[in-house]
Image (cartoon, rainbow, N blue to C red; front, side, top):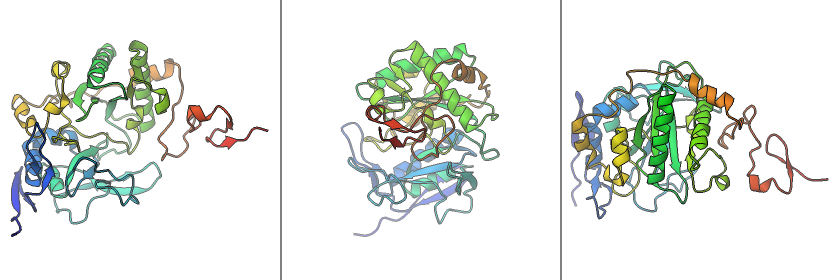
Length: 361
């Protein structure tokens, strides 16, 4: 069989070459037809302006699925995992075009890397050529990579909860933010969760941003018994987890208008608060439907109009009880952090401040 010729997609002022354009990236479902590589590239071009509002000038990791995504496929857990079908590309891929810009970032380990920094609509389309479905931008701009300019509130449904629960908690979050003088912008996660973003002035560290997220999560816990900030899964129960650690350095969330590796090519989609409240099934927002939704404009068009003070959320961190919470396991031991041991394993032994077991004598 003859090889399908490459196609070209117009993105801004550039034409981007797409090889193997008929490669199937998503199989057909009972709701959606199959999606090809060319269709992914065309989708990113069609949402170019609002997608760039989410990515522009931000260090961005790429979630790549070069052979497409199928049920049962796995995302690699790290650079040594050879069994994964998809993987995170944290460094600029080889062969990048000359218009692709990059920025140096520092990981929690202290190591540095040059990461993709999108500056124009052709960049995400080229990333689609490289098998990218999901963009993971840092909450910083490249002119100051150590001071975040947005708070990300990740409402993550735990087993026994669903999108409806996340939606309810998002409503509580909206009210709480407004009482504190802040404006939140919601989007679907592309799965069952809800994300809320708040633009802030780039005057605080990642550690302060994380503390603000913990403080806000604790206020949500106080207002809604179906919310938890418990880091250990065994303690979360059937509640919505506020994933405060998503505000750490080198922790990212799927960007607005990213595709997700789920059936039907779902999209992480910005909505108005009323649209979110009326949405019953986030799968309705996918590669086929989101471009039509944008004929009414980008729901996040005003997100950059005002940057807020993080102070009210830091006051919650200072005033609500609970203290420091655990960091992710790949982080170095952090000041004031509780022992990194599951609560259920503490019963029979003592543990030092680093989470090492001390045998009873």
